[in-house]
Image (cartoon, rainbow, N blue to C red):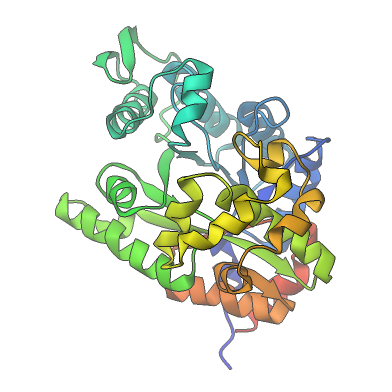
Length: 350
């Protein structure tokens, strides 16, 4: 059996502080553990109130010496573009390392509740362009869907490259948008390896059609991993997390359809009493252990094919399936870095 090279661990990243948390300072130890394992990146899932991207990225950057840091995901319009650009460039100047700015669309009702404009494709494209131009030291004058900015400019830049801006995407239109206008795509959790292969093809073809080097557009596949966990732990890490995505109307249906699954099976899930009056994601109201019972209403095959579960060896095999499907890098989700040692060893023993 061939053995993977240690530098292939750089193709693995991991979320720190997955899900709801009470101690954001835990990100520091988790990031150090990821770096000790030899992983290439840590990713930060922002949650307003407890997981501010700029604060945690700064802390993680100073607590580590090598590992790349990325956001998975931040949102344009919530931050002024000069604030977004300044955060990324300050991080890079302080650490000497690149920052990956993962951004996304989220869902329409959120922006209505926040009193912000709709997050359209043109807002995404224009906002990314504004941030890039600011990071290159340009003076930006803009009026359009992304806002009105008479004169924006960053001061005292140190000549570093702009951050890589990566778009979170599921459907073919968003995937093509990433291929045409962004530096990469961050694929959603609970996609099968076959769906990752199809998604990668859409991104690459869109990049080529736009006259870009398709190989330069990175594909980051997010994979929920649960190696060597008990059944109860696996339900909390995988099943309950899946509930938070699939219970959202339209969003969960789109995710199921992307995998070729029957979205009508979601009716049973959404009829559970705990989800009856939920607005938004269920984990805003319940902890993941509280959602384990609900998760049993999801088809078992969805979790078995859309995540990496079982022994560390089985999980490692699934990770290679995603990489062989065309993903450039993986973003491991659900299990914190301190639980990934055996998985890493099996990954290297390919």
